[in-house]
Image: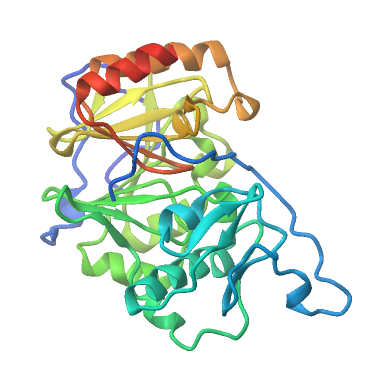
Length: 347
């Protein structure tokens, strides 16, 4: 690899990472959510209850579901994923998700299948989204990943899907960049997804926001020969061989338009990625939105709640309009004034 595994100090704001672009010279190609969103409990690990002795799925089907093929069973943990991925089909009823309208058009069915794919086939802890009969068009949904988040507002930014139980179902993202694409946190490794990402120009860097969401990082690194980036404070046995270990408090630069912001608290080495051209902050588990507003999910804090709150204050100085969290919904602020007003009220 081009980079040493020795921890390196890139604390200077003007520092630029040694380039990996010589290894990957292919050119790269290129929903709005309201700021108040339904409650998003962050669930780290949940065991699905056993199927009933009769094995009849009807007994698992929540009665709140609309009649038809798609349904949510009683193992739902109210994580909100199906509701933000397919709001035309799923809603919240009785503290859990349910199908309130069966998909009637091709687009709605595709979105429902993407949720089915995410929930049932991509190692979701609960496998709560089901169909009465196996969907014959599931392969069409598989082909859609990675999914563009908003082709008009956020060109070249993708939701990878294939959430891994090793990362507690966290989201991962792909930025298509002219100087080399960046994979943010690790999806479950599948060759199907890898081939789709390869068509988009592959991966030059794999940025790991923190130690919880590393999943299949080794397989992705091997597949694309990409340099992995992780703060030294979060390095464990499974990530000891990452190519770049951030040392110190930063900030650091990845090229000219990406800034890495050390935001310790959830973990010692949590780092956010700020993609300046599109004003997006990828927060990992540092910050998310719930029905009552911003949240740092104290119950899952692995380092220091006080430090995490101090790290939130750092974000007041950054000019971003979007938050892309590891868990929960994406957030778009109207402008920096709204963003700062919400952050200041939270802090």
